[in-house]
Image 1 (cartoon, rainbow, N blue to C red):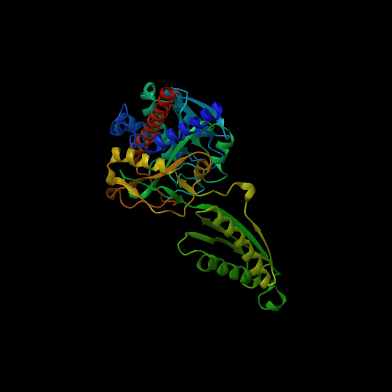
Image 2 (image 1 turned 120 degrees about the horizontal axis):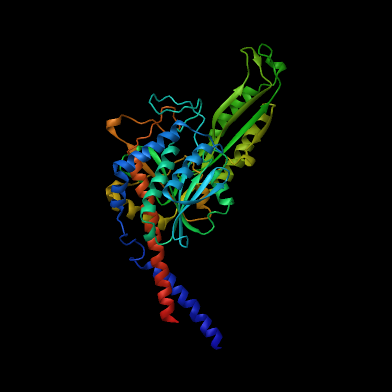
Length: 447
């Protein structure tokens, strides 16, 4: 009887500790660090630190590398980490680099930057434009790498005071081939209890940030369909089976999946066709047509339902027009990304840290976006938080959107990103250590 009584009391005790930690307001907000967020920002703004970051960003921008080809970028990262005295693992997921700053012991918090460029010909006329034809950093990943290296510099300056370990994740292949999943599969994040990531955005003001708790970016998938008929002379359509007509009906029908089958309050993109290839002459009906596109949703259930209906619509509409169709969803090529869903507790930490650094009025709540990000793979196994950091400055004129050949990075963003990374990591570790000490202290007293 005594054993069962003691066992029951242990269960009650642990429930009490968990309730206390989650409800105590002093534990849900970080204490002041050994160095405040504003001091981190001031450090990153020093001319020698800022110029160092600008130089790194421009080197990476001049030498863009596509997914899984980031060998020069990886070499540059390792060279800078060596100079800073930061230990790291390499290779991880072929070109990835995982750095470590702090005690080398728990708790562990990760900061992530993506490394790869895009197959785009740069159209921006400036001294440091891409030197590689047909390749460009048109999504700001050169800035992301630079800001994480900047955070490493800040953190290394205060390494003796870090209460745990900061893991620096320089990730390949965000744009294609599921680089985040490859990092997870490598097992280098097994002890990490939280991860943060950021993305530059041209339509948020410089010095401001934006994010939200819960769904932030949609889950995304791609598909390609080949619709086959029977080619022939356009003057004798009765002797042909027209795949162009079938493909046209498919495209129109796919639009009805959202307008007539989806909840109007739920955001989805259904079968958005961005590729259509068929025919080579004005008077010849081709044998086949190839179409391709993307589909997006914020929940796994909606996503899988869309996938099923896209295949049904394509094969069904093709059959109506006497054609055959095959649909490829590229499962083997890692083109699927789940939705980015931000952890609620990390959202509160972000608001507190960013508000302390920038001012609460510069921390914006943004609406969910239909764009996709493979940071979501981390969030499926680790509590994670993703946010946007602004670059808009009226004095520079309008900035083009992401993935544009005219995309530009406002380099004034670099100190903000570096200091936010460093401050989020150190504040998270302080908060986590507070929880651990309180729980250990109460356990000692109670026992």
